[in-house]
Length: 502
Image 1 (spheres, rainbow, N blue to C red):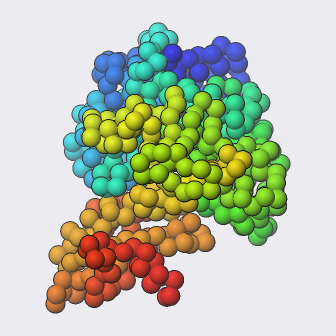
Image 2 (cartoon, rainbow, N blue to C red):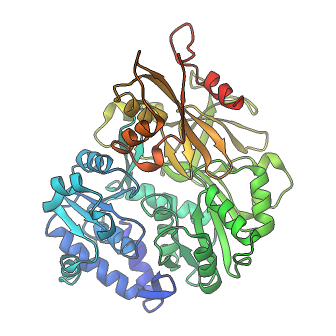
């Protein structure tokens, strides 16, 4: 049961339909996409054995689609890497995954000197002569795979700051695909899937159900999310859907309200997730863009498939439902438990647990983290929530202190550890502050070493040497001492109160 079968079946049914588009330009039909994926798969096989890891370090490009499926054609494991990451972070992921081959976009190449120095002999630049030579080779045979074979290493930051690779099998991703088609939206060959969120994460996941039903894959010419460009594409392509972070939806709404574009003619569905969607914003966006919204709640460990709400569920005046994350997905069991693992009644807040075919096999070569997260046969999400009497789940807190800014997860401890590398920083604690544009932004509280001086500009530059730009604190606030409990634990609740009063 290889994921390649999704492309194989669609190419058989709709060989001459448009499959991949760059903006309004058709790049490949389904027949051509399958041929290129099998050709590139043969090229990958010359350098990799089945089960080897193949990394993709790229912004959104039309080649992303063929790269994902070519790795599966070669029975390899895809390792999509967030293109926003710092060179050091990219290298850490490639080292941890022990990759055999790296595909990198020409746009990112100059910004990855450390990665190039280490992996240059295993690197192929997407779209160059060597890449096209790999594509043009004798095609590999359509593969088969054991359902439990590893298909995707999904790297998700841990609370220790170092990324962990969630091991997703062909079975996991096929179960997520089927659940999406069962629960969230109906797709066919006359639909379009627009990739404006990173294809290394959520948008890449939505390739699978849309390709399974023959929906065209559209990558904007910009390769990024530009509200006006997105709205224009929704006027030109049929029955458009996309996965967007809530902050992206807000930007779309504002673009229409400001008269930059009218409501798009062919906007069919927007799946939102990856951050809090406030009820007021959801109502405003529905008024402006129409009743086009669906919601998912998931994690990399159970990709986009823990709970959800389809469009019909959004047609309600019930704020409790609109402020929730919906109901358990098909094939997924969800519980809310106390610290002893006992189920809690409706209305009680506890940790969210789930199990089902979508749940990962574990973390790549990290047995201790695997045992902790999958103890008792359930995925312990680290998120706190409660069910109501209708079985609707509402998130109440994020016990892992993750800050979600612009749809990206940022873990404060990672930033704190970087700040503590600066010789002038004695102590630090990083918290999130609500922000109308980004959802949340990072605020760093810093205690200087005795007699030391350091400016916010110096700390900003220091962070840029070690972590991605989007992980930098928005502001730095200097204190004489951090508030702590009697046990010496920093009281982040007190720091948040300080922010409320400034």
